[in-house]
Length: 259
Image 1: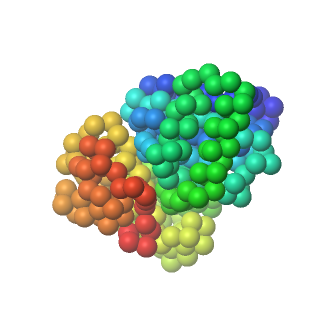
Image 2 (image 1 turned 45 degrees about the vertical axis):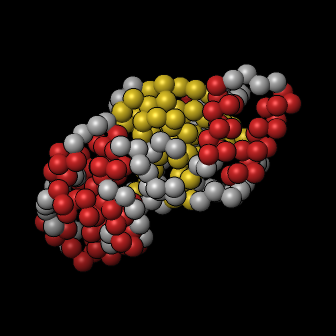
């Protein structure tokens, strides 16, 4: 809808307070969104992407999306024409950001380069984007009404440890039906989906400085050690190291196959 269209004419730099949201909108251009600090959430009707510091999200033109900040966040963005899509992506995707691309984003969003320098920097950014890794940091959102009700219940309280059968009784569907639908609509089993939800919630809480033990309980893990081990297997580092900023070169990267 026209009221949801936001016009971007160049790079932007936008500080966000913890919990601050940018309501659902779309652009006529492709957008590269980079949180210099903090954690940024990108949400569409298809799912939710978590973008940690030193990672970026590619948001294709015309895709309606919303943002939410977890912790004090500084969002920086670059734009490219709709026809300029180096990775040929048709959905939001979280990307690894190498040191060169990071410096180019900083230069384009901090300084006022002349037209020629700006074109050169944008070309460098495109060259780097053609080689970056895509990171599976998306939580697919189911569309079936019964699944969506369960998903919303668990998103509101990730520590809810009811079985799919128990949740199904409330949603009005049998466990076998829901299990089949979860795999069909999200590409994950229900336990994998719930673990991914909990890990995304953990990333958000860690970005605000919450202690690891508090995060473990809030996300429904039986013990802090169980949380640490699940986090390490899926993201390649421990929650404590992640919170301190020691993020793996190509991560964090949620791996559903290890959940």
